[in-house]
Structures are given as C-alpha cells and as structure tokens.
Length: 299
Image (spheres, rainbow, N blue to C red):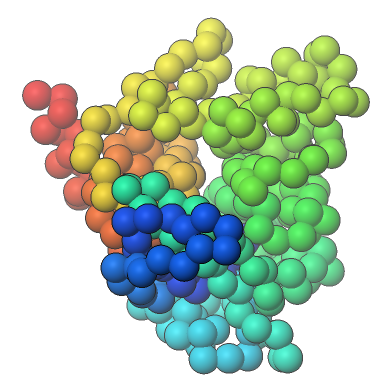
C-alpha cells in the first residue's frame, strides 16, 4: 500500500521537562526529582506521530539560529521526516515549552520564539507543497493568520485539512467552515461552538466536523448520529503529547481510507500507548505496536 503523504504545518519546540512530587505555589521553591530536554512542539509532535505510523511526512515550520534549533532539526530528520521546509530564522530563538510533571499530569508554559515567524507569506510561498499533499495537519501554536492562509490554500486545492484548535483562541467562522475536520477537547469544542457569528446552519456544520477528545472517556464523533468511541484503559506515566499522537494517527488512518469510526479507534489506541512512556515523542508507537495492542484488546 502506498504511504500517505501528510504535510504538517506547525510549531517546533524543545520541551524543558521537570519532574516533581509537589507543584510549587506562587512564591514557593521546591526540589524537583529530574530535568530533561525533550523535542516537542505540537507541529513536530504530530509529524513524528504520523511518521512512526508509516506515513511520508513533511514538516513546514521555523526554528531559531541556535543550538536547540539545530538539535531539533537533526532529530526530526532521524525520525524520517522531510526537513527541507524547516526555515532557520536569524536572530530568533527556537521555541520552548517549560513542562512540569507531577502525579501523571502536566502544566505547560510555551514561549513561541521562531514559531511566530511562520507567516502567511511564508505559507503562501509553499502553495505547490500544499497542493500535492494527501492531508494537511495544523494547530494553533503558529500565527492564526498563517493557519487561515493554510486553510484557504487547502480549500483552493481540495486537500483535506485537520485543524487541532489548541491552544484554544477565538477563531473566525470561515476557518471553522473551511477545515475538513476539527479535533478539539471538550473545553475547546465549547469555545468553538460559542463563536457568535455562526448561523444555526453553520453551527450544525461545525458540530459535524468535530472529533472531540474526552480523555479517559474516549472520542465523541458525529457519524449520522453522535457516537462515543471508548478509550483504552492503560496505566499512564506521562500524558504529554497524547493529543498530538491522536491527531497524527488520525491523519494517517483517515488518509489510508479508514472510516471515521475505525480511524478514531486506531488513533485512540496510539494515544493510549503514548501515555505509558515518558516524553511527547519518545512514547509515540509504531504501526506494528498499535496493531498488536488492538489485537490484544480485541481478544
């Protein structure tokens, strides 16, 4: 079977990860258990997830002219991702995410850095790349106008697009209507559906595009009627990147022609496996691991 050709347009960060038993209050200092630097960023995470599942993945993004940027670019190349469209921005720092892990949960502060230089003009310069893709995957850690430019070009060339609306912000209705699929969590979906200038008909269109992740409950979709695709019960170690794993997997399995229900089941399995290991990208499973996991659970 030919590999799906997926273009991810999004952020590239280095995650600065601190593990601690106690999250400090304001003004308080506590001792942590460990510290690591781990490749991250929602765009890069979703690209790695898709590549590990067997897709041909190209990442369009920006890094700074610094050691972190070079390290991240080499890492992404090692993951089998096409890095020809990763732009090095002079006099800009590479984006970082400061992550605190405690009791299996996380809190995150993101500093965009060079990610903010992924402009609409830069996106437009890669129109040919967008036009030849089988699926486009985009998030909101890059400028909103660049996401809107991506959606406009995807619509122009009839390329399906998944918009992962995270971190959530006010979105124009034209973007919601142009996206083929929307992958919010429950909080993000509520914000999307509160968009004030949506007519009742447009609101119904947006609802039907939503593939809403609900954590341990599973994923809620609209497939003629509303349905819940249950999650898999696993012992979690680190939930960082679970949503990105789900999105990358969803892009792969939809592009392979699976139904929305089957694609969500595969993506649920990939996300479940990802939380059993530390790190956003290092915990992402291969296609074989997902198939073996599903075979065990189907028994």
